[in-house]
Image (tube, rainbow, N blue to C red; front, side, top):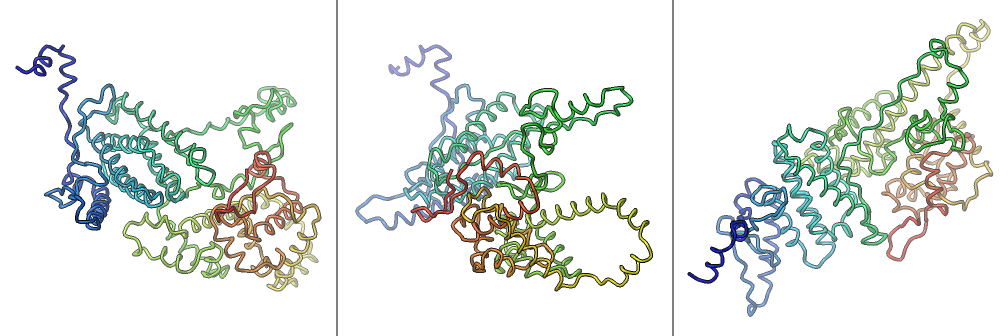
Length: 556
């Protein structure tokens, strides 16, 4: 008997078991093709790239890449061996070594390593392709327990690799959606009872821990990779909103002192608290209590203007491109029928070009309808439709509240006023135009705003204000260009179609901000909650200067 064998024989049982833990075979390419078709396609692309690279190497170099007999694909890519067995001992980790989730996560980790070639931009693209393909394969599982296991493998692969290239140079919009999709999958599972789903409590807690690691990593991207990188959110836990306080019973029935009840209602009974312990906090600080600035209600309700907003159905699911396409078409048809707008005007209002619009509206353009999320028309249409819905709901509220007053006025109307109403003709288009011109002149006459004042609204907020103002009776794009100081229509078009702060150097940004600040002052409206926050966090305002790297930046 050899010394090694003798040592193994004489070792304690536990130690012997640890040394002889069976190795676990990896996912074969044949299995990958069947169970994970999207990931298999990504692997095929990397395999082809490896074999093409081998062909370009000099003949005196040994570049023989091993080939899988069943699929004809390379089994070693960028020195990463996909046939290497897995360690059979995972220690105290609740993810079993021979589980599908562990094999899947290990394969994805190797695929990310094989995607790195030194080109940061290229690595970022390959990282995204691999991670998104893995996400598509995960969502195809019908078993929640199996899906959960694979999600853990996905998140461990991401955290262990670090995906630096993707975070530093990847497309922020695509990255944001990818992380959002994964977070929502976790959120759906964490909302349910783990035991009922057949998920071990240890594995459940293990997943929460790793989700926290990824959340921290994504939150510190800018700190890790510089100011030009983007931080991301990863909201993987469902946090229910606090329930609104029940309305107070009638004072008379309880015999409560009215003054004391009123004081308690506005939160004067105690010091202000960040938690919704008073009516002012619970209702979004609309009352502007002692020491608190008055907040404009309309500004805070426009959720579609916030970064990261996603259109959702009543059930809470994201609206699919097909749903948005149908809603947009119905809105266009409605506008045509009542002659309130045209398709061309609506496209201009969305800030997209005709080609982009036509590609989105043709469902045959996309094999997978969700690919249409990368078309700007999806987001522009979703925001427009949400804005239209918001405007219509507000109009209904105002009309219903004014109903009683209108009836009283109608009852008190005299015969002479009735005669006058009969002879009066509705305002003509010319009179509406004149009224719009008069409004613009009154706005520009406000003297409390300097032309070189600090800007406290982001580009998306100013864009939303422009589109809202264009909806007013008699207001045209030509009139608005003149109101902004006779700026060029191309400048306005570029500004409306920009993303985030990439048009902060556009002259429209400064001119429009000053114009709408004058409008706010003229109408006596309070500053929005977001505006007050911007002033506090960034006293010097948003930057309108172009940096040396030819990228637009916001100075904080």
